[in-house]
Image (cartoon, rainbow, N blue to C red; front, side, top):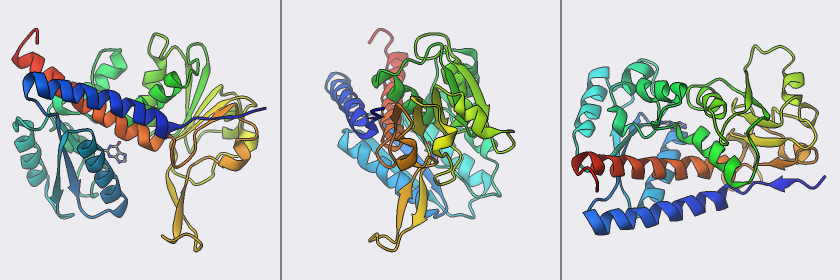
Length: 300
Ligand code: GUN
């Protein structure tokens, strides 16, 4: 079987171009530059890399971004004050608190402080509820990116059996909600698996679309995949590699080389889902700026 390698980098570039064109339009017609504030608590190296990548993508798209760095010892009050300030800052249309945050802080308590209309990460309870009710709202960027990747690659979702491995708030749960929604971008029969799932391999083998977000390098092996299935790898894991200049390389949750011999289509790591997350963050921030404008000037 000839496997299709789904090129997330190329599809993300298409989306970024569309966003850039809309940003130029917003700026020339209304003088508005969509802006994002990323709040980074502590010095988690992976989070620093992600936030830098987001900053560069915003610069390139002609959008504004700022990073607010807080000490790892920052208190709940400091974080709330920071978010309150950004909630009322007119230059900022989107706010993102990079996760994970230090353990002494309660993620739910922090995320619900963000104004829902600036919650471009789609993690505020109001946006989670909107997604669960099938209403418009901001959708978390990684699952939104996976859905977009499927649609733009011509993968039929409706009527298929989708298996999601991982039940995180960032990926697994919202992914399930998205694929369950009515319409051609959803209408899947969805199953969510996790570390306590019995006979995980057999459940995965039922998938027409297998989406893996569990954070374990090369966990999905060829025997866990139905021939011809579409395999989407959300994992980004560092594995030691002395032959690599950085001393490590990035691999997904799927054993790419073995699984690609069985799958009908598969995303690589890197160059699959990762670039899509950033593209969807750009798009959500653009939409937040457009919505802020239409609230200020209805009919614009
Ligand atoms: N950490 C890893 N991925 C994400 C993401 O999409 N959003 C936030 N806020 N933190 C993350």
